Length: 308
Length: 282
Image (cartoon, rainbow over all chains, first blue to last red; front, side):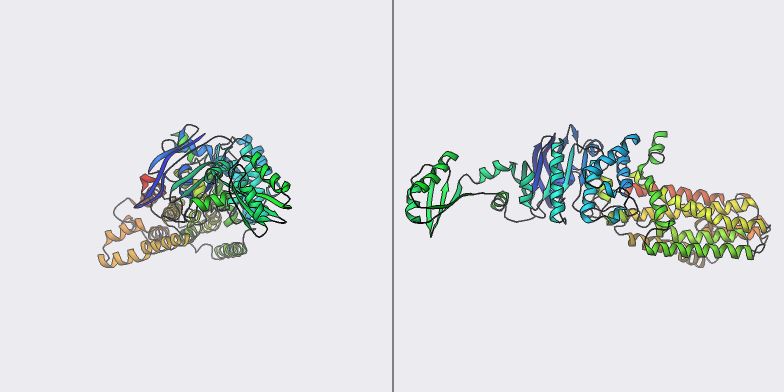
């Protein structure tokens, strides 16, 4: 379990992170969202023990990042937003090197390296030099490196940056798989729809402050208590709007040409009743759909784009 | 104590640096430039061996040791300037800092890589040195061993100095420039200036040989050719038969000091922020 308690980081007069708190359970995939300079990387660096917090702390399975950073390091896999690989080593040597650093017993290393290479789909590149790998493969190798010591927490800072759509999709599947394996995964990204796809928890940060934290659906529901329904009818849209406006759960209904826009806060049964009324009213219902508020809407609604 | 040494040497995962050094500088199969440089070095080496065979009997073996020291003064910084600054520049540094490895292990690993390369270089230079020593009777075995000791200990100092500057610099080329610059200052500019200011005072000159290995090696070479017939030529500070040993001790002492200080300076993990107060990252 990871508990982040009132984490704060100041650089001289600048406060990069202002008391961020949250907690995550094994299997949680946490999407950390924020503009550039919002404080995501600083927070991740503090959790990874790269930066000491000015105040507050993070505790991973009982180990405090401030009091016992070495224990925390043994339990985390950190993938920075920009990273470099060594030029003159082969893929398996690179992984063996980090396995040695993480004190993986010598007799287990070969099997572990084979496993992480298989997991990251790099088995065929085992004997290739790391500099010969494509960007996507290097990204996967960096992830493989994070996994050699079976960490409890993975910190992935913009892992999909610079990847093509296919590599991004593969990375996404891999992260989901890691979540299924019971690891806590923290992913920071700008690509919000992607995060919504595979994160069960998100946090939105701006100017060092956590503006929202929780399950994706709950955050969306909290910020958009009313839903918007859209319908297209063949005839009498204005009349249809008047009829619909009287139904339970409908807050407002307006017609524009053949389209109806309905503000709604009812339950699914009431929603079905709206569709039924449009059909039975003889308006010739052509289309009926719920406008989905997504993470991007939530992000835009919550944030102003300001940076420190 | 034993486990500390084990952690730094035998069980140090940074020993991978030895393989990297070997592959990068001593094996064909790297970049075209590396291969070309290696081919050129091999050509020069063959030429050197042929010259030694040609002029056997006339060439003091310490002259080859002197040449070797000059070579290592260039090759040491060339190999090591990116040891830590390079990690910082290519952004592999953070990956080491978040791993459960100590800063001492990082520095020791880098230094071991350099020592391995130095050892291979010294082994290669041993052939022409031995060839020259066999046919040159004026240099004693003892003097030759002392000369090798002075040369190799100075080379380890150059390696430690380069690692230290690499630990302080943000870019590898800054580290290379600083190393070459300080070596030039310490070995050429400073002694010349100091001697001229001191007016050729004998004691000052003798003190300078402790700083400058080339001066010390030149004296060892002269002693072998019997141009030096009394101990006063070695200086007045130490007995003639011990000449060279203080140099070795000074160079090794400074090597350890610079390595320790290099380890102490590795405290700025933020790539964009050069110097973070030590307490904030320890």
